[in-house]
Image 1 (cartoon, rainbow, N blue to C red):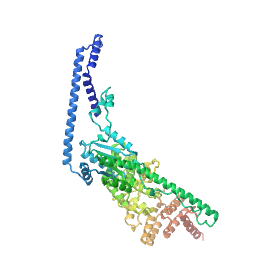
Image 2: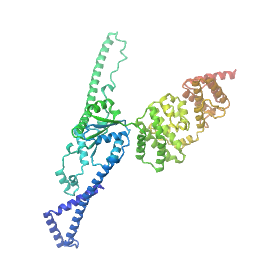
Image 3: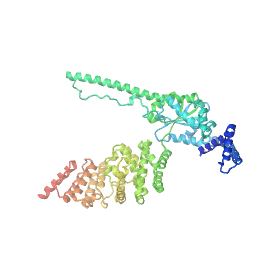
Image 4: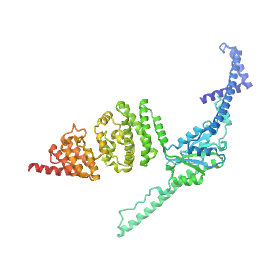
Length: 624
């Protein structure tokens, strides 16, 4: 729209200028008379054409005057609003107070440094502040991306481009005049430099850490290539080995020196890149009296460099942006806004879950100590795409509780991936209590994560949706094809209440409940920790004697007795990890032997040895 008005202005100026050129007017007049004489004016008289040109000239003049008046009015209004905003708007937090004070100061030659980890909202709070308080200000604001700026020339070029983009002078409007605009503009085009910048303009240097693609670290932080050879240890008593060892030591010394030189050269090269831009920023503040805001990811650049360079060479005010509720909300909103949903109802439901869990999730990651926004972004993106995929397939079957469980399942997969504790997730029953199964498979050994997850207000109601769903995005797995079956398995799981009760009261009576093998082994492991193993063993044996062993395995309808036996033995091996609960195992093995009818089962782990030994004894008792 602005370009349209500029083009119209260019046409209007062209018409006014052309009308004042006598030779051009005579040439046009003679052309029109010639056309009229030869009947080429389509019946129009010369007088009519002349009157029409007068009207166009007047309209052009009116447009130019109106344009100037409108621009003047806009400037006055902006000035007025700027004054009102400056004196009547209340600054809402310490950051706004300090930045406002810095930008208002006339002779303060400091720079303002905003640091924080990736995604903490550094750029957002600066942009939001300027939009809030400087939207109608006449002060020029220049955004400079530091990505790849390695020399003073590159920085100057970037600034000149910003100056040209923000130049709204009359001379800059000349380029929009048709035909003659560009030649005139090129002829009178000014050369942009720092001297063209108004005093106390605002320069924002964003992504300062990206001057070098991998940040800056001192040489001491890099790994050494030097490795002591174990082959030559304790062999120097032999002359040949002693000589070989000396040669290897010389080679190692050479490699170490080479590496040291390479590291120092690497560090110096990157250090110089940052120094160039830092020196230029200092020049802007000191020599040209400009206001400079630097936005920097300090955990990439390095705290030492920030302290030595920014606080040592630049007189700077520092604000560190930390992750907070607003940051999380902004991140989730950004992901939702950037994703194209198949329908608005799905977006509404996903956003509803975000509203419910964000504060809780913030507390969780604070306890866990993983406040890095890269992790949060990965979790949020995974959740949005997974939830959208599932809701598209089975909207009516998906409850809000399922969606909340899915979110925390993805959180679990993400952090257990980092802890390298994923190997048990595929064995957890879909629909089962998440806390119950994490503790059953000893994921509680990742104490910090388990403590953080159990602090969630949703912890007791979280259920496992299956690694096929909760892990496919994060683990780069194939999208699950049998979504309906997985959701049906979740919804039809009949043991959730029992698992909730067991987690709350591990000494509960179990005689009237239908239990799975997982529940029995959970009770045995818990009782051993509490020193009540004998009492629990008696309860479990009594239970086993009154129930069919086939009922210990979920989804057992299509399994024969031998398959049931293998399932039980494999689960015992997986869950107990070598622990022996003799009374309980004897009863289970006895039932397996009675139903399976074979003396020996093939397997390489200890549990098969235990079973085969007991089965052999039972066989001997039967035959004797």
